[in-house]
Image (cartoon, rainbow, N blue to C red; front, side, top):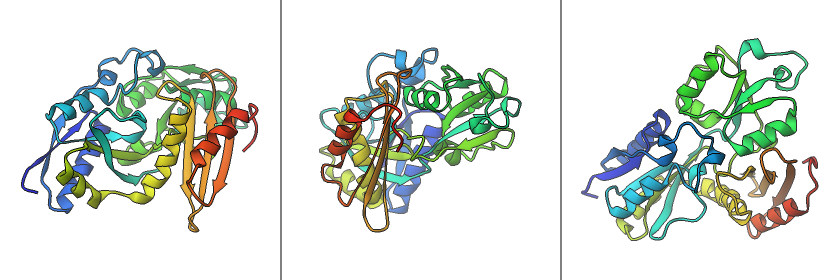
Length: 305
């Protein structure tokens, strides 16, 4: 391809890492590209929790609008931020490898207490703006206090360092990709089968217009179909549940060496409502998401996996 591909991205440190990673992946297959930074609604509104921001796609809409206008050729998103329904004319053309999908709890040493779950003291103040994380944290530790926290990864860690919180929740994928030194804190790395991550957490989505066939063919060279197979299940469960950024739902899918699918889900009606859990295994992805939704709908609260 003779043209230089314009990659649209947010301007946070993690988003720029993701876009630069994509640029390097394209360079490896002989395609030149450059980055275009776009500020989204989610970047501009920093004083509200996610559940208080109206609408969907508040980390993606402005980038998608630029793609539809032709200001950029492709967009790189954290796939967990993308609504399950694509705007007319756009498509998720390819996905990246999957980084560690787990959530991590970063705890101040002064807030540690032996004998308590996660070694976190009773009544600790934990920072997260995710309804999903709030619901699951309360399911494990109903005694803790949850406060919203916004900002990029370094900003949130600074707030923890300053003592605004006893602990904060972050995605392990971002911390790993940014190679952030966490040695000053106690880190709890959750098992994604138990503390269920957001659908497609740890995966990058490469979005294009549907009619840009030359670029779509090129992106197939950096596509990971094995990742797409499991994230398709996760995102379909989310879609069937009618979920978005406001719904407290986690879905995680693995595929074993024999090709069998295993799916875990945790959902609540609202973040401070009782949690429902479900687990399914299947030799095929056919109707797997539909079966998971059916099981979630008939599962009693707090039923063990």
